Length: 425
Image (tube, rainbow, N blue to C red):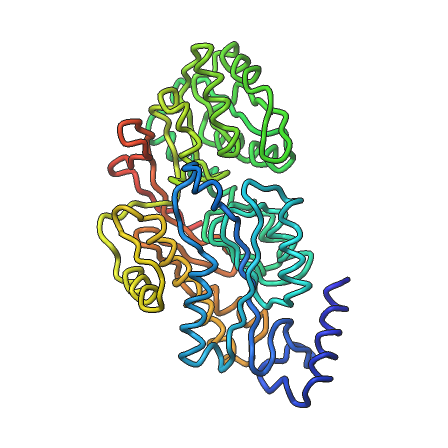
């Protein structure tokens, strides 16, 4: 069913239920109301990956229930009067992690066609295809907490896609810049390893261009045969890199199959400098758990990510956690349960920004996609030391990034001192 037909059906159903239900300020061009908005309510769908099984198995860090956190802050907002005089109606959808675009598609359809959401919020590293299923195919606003999409995806979405994380093109630029500044590329024989997917091939081309722009050549690019979230022939790939004299490897592999390549390299005594990034969520404490069995071989890997460590709780997220606990949520310790503590702040901060933009859009002439986008672009994204911003041409927020070294003594990404940088796109 096309978006236009669904909108028409939505209008007819509302008119059939109540006369005058679309008050002034909700209509778009030509008097058409935005999908998911009535006089009294605004529909927001929250889509997340279910990592509970991985958390119980100790394979990923505990982050708490993001959907519950977001819904709790929406309830707090509703009790205070809602957004633009309307109550927020939150629906929740999950898919099992690890996943693929095919596995994620049903939640896109449910959030847009079934829920008629005005906004779809994503948490959990959804694929680019899923983001565009919402923002392009279904012409719905998509806001992702953790997702890395190509710059072309934002253009395809025509302004309807926002992400906290850097887009893949900007990340590749800063990855090369950081590696160069750390002295890792001078005199190096560079290789790239990736899944044999079209999307990753395009990102590899972007990475290669950035390397060439900085005066470096790629000696070899190895594409492993992959299906879904698993890749094969890691041993063949490691042998090829070793035979080619590759001593510095940029990895574009997903965090789940990446350790298999590292392990295969260790088996044949191949010890290159591993370079990782936020692409495919490699430099996350949650995904680092997949490297438990190969940590000795991975020792000394250098990662570039937008996570900038904090030593003390920052006031905004501290306030959010206090609100969360006041509403009956579990208390998370800043030091021992940082990922869950931070996740509360992230969901709280996003909900507040959404409400601010909705209120401003209503005041600017009515709550439409166009007005919401214009107002949301004005709002900064601040998560502790992570700082970001949007513009009319830039819908990937984070501008700060940090260089890390993987160390086995703490089994962590240890921040390299004085290696925080800023790129405003």
